[in-house]
Amino acid sequence: MPVCASCKEEVDDVVVLKVKGKSKKVCEDCADELREQAEIAEASEEAVRDMMGYKGRW
Image (cartoon, rainbow, N blue to C red; front, side):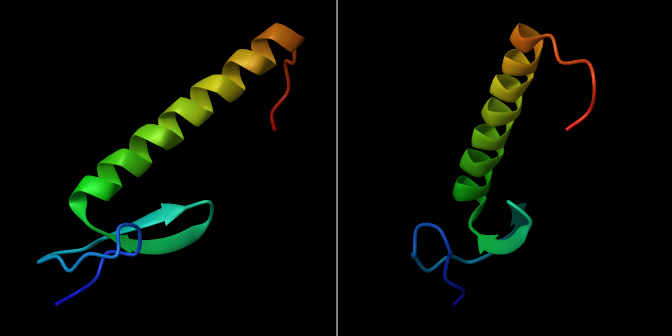
C-alpha cells in the first residue's frame, strides 16, 4: 500500500501534488489541506503587494 508523504499513513490512493516546486505523493485529505494553504499564502502575498503599491510581477 502507498504511504502519504505528509501524514505518513498507509492509504489506498495517492495524489501527486506540486508543493513549492517539488512533487509529493499525498492522500486526498492532505492534498486538500495543502491546496488551501497555498491559496491562503497566495492571497496574503497579494494583500502585501497591494499595501506596498507594487504594480509589477514577482
